[in-house]
Length: 134
Image 1 (cartoon, rainbow, N blue to C red):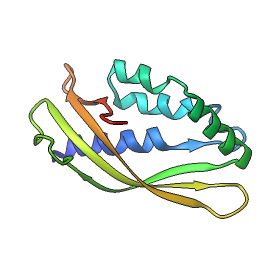
Image 2: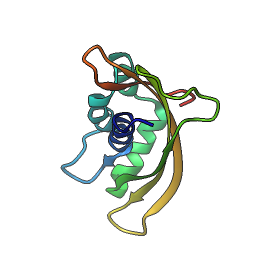
Image 3: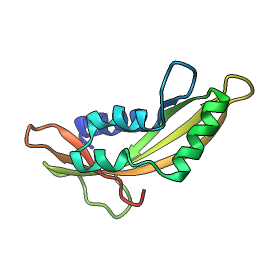
Image 4: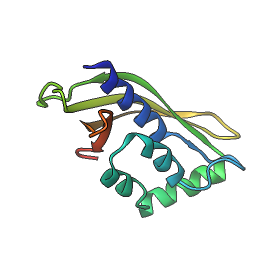
C-alpha cells in the first residue's frame, strides 16, 4: 500500500474516532467529524456530520462520564476482495483499538475496524470518499 494512502487513512481514522467529552473540550459528537473533514471529500464530509439518535446517546454517555475516546491503529490492509491500489483509487481496511477513558473508573476498550475508499483529488492529494458498509 502506498505510504501516502496509508498516512491519510490513519489520520482520518484517528480524527474521526477521537472524542473529548471533558469539560471545555469537544462541544458535540460532530467535532470529531469536523476534524476528520480535512481528510475527506465534500460528499462524505456532509454525511459524517449528520447526527443520529445513536451518536446523540453515545455523546450524552461520554459527556456524563467526562470521557476521552482515542484510537490506536494496529494494522492497515487491502480489504478482502478489493482491488489493489491504483494511481487514483485505493481501498483500505483499518483495524484499531478504541479506548474510552472516563474521568472516574476504569478505561474500557474494543477492537474495531473500518473499510475506506480513497481517491486522489484534482490537487493530487488522497481523500477518503466513502465508508463502505459503515
